[in-house]
Image (spheres, rainbow, N blue to C red):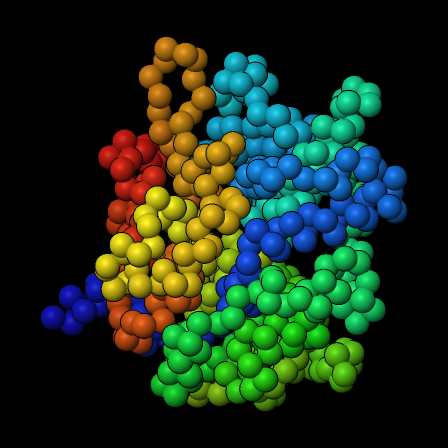
Length: 462
């Protein structure tokens, strides 16, 4: 009997077993109005490139459907100006040069049936380098469209062989998102969100607020760990949770600079206290709950041991970025990880909200108007989860999982479309977890993506 229970615990996951529950903020606890925020992010980078760096003014105008180009999991080959969608073994499934899709023939000619040249470094999740950039979250994605249009524009003016625009793109990102930008009203992004929070932010559903309180009263330690600076974090939290938002959390860590928060040592990344949103001197250790800046998972875990009185307290972390949240929390800290994947809603586009009768689908009121948001399912890039191997016209098609999809089953405990999807469940609900010996779709809740289900038999597992 005991053995049976242990097996069940091994193949399932429950919040009841966790001592601490951590949350990322942006696109996890705080959900955005995606079409509006995508447009704002695009504009904030484009404004900078045009006004500060002299790029073509055409970049400032966007065709209504052009955000369809944005798809999570794309990799930009910076020097070549190519965007790639990769299979789990590194084969290029689709590609575009700038915004223009490559044909099957061009794909085979350019990449063959081989793994992409940088795949071995990217599959170790070193997803930032001088050669390539991985787009894996909604803050980055509009930048993918801008880079693609920059390539188009450079090609128009003269035939480029190697591209050199990336340093300007990095400057645009830093100008808009640097730590002092919020305070200085600098760039396009922060001033606009400050002035019109309702246009960009979705308030936290009552069910989620109730669930957070429930977790806390069940004795869980609640953590908020975000790479956003404290001033922006406060704006978001007051707007989505209310002025008493600090009461929901035991520990708030801002400017966490993930993934470094998980991979760096206390010496490399000490915690700092804050005064009026200014970082103060480095702390030698983390002694009590509170609000901190920067820091590292090692010292946080020491504090959790002290607070729980346990030698190895169990932590789960909810986040939306494979690169910054899920991979490092699992790989460096061995935490349980819950991947927030709005793409799981993409399947529901054809379902009229009113007719959903299943209790778990009673989220229509909240998600209904969201379903038309950009890049749940990009027409240009297809499913986030599976795709066909590029073949010649008459060859038999093979369906394979994407590299993004493989990362989900490898590094996350479970994947859900939003916190709201699980907020009404009892805390001791047991989720089937992803594991190498269960089905490839086990860890998706409430249901696996249709693209994976209909093909589970035919998707070749490597």
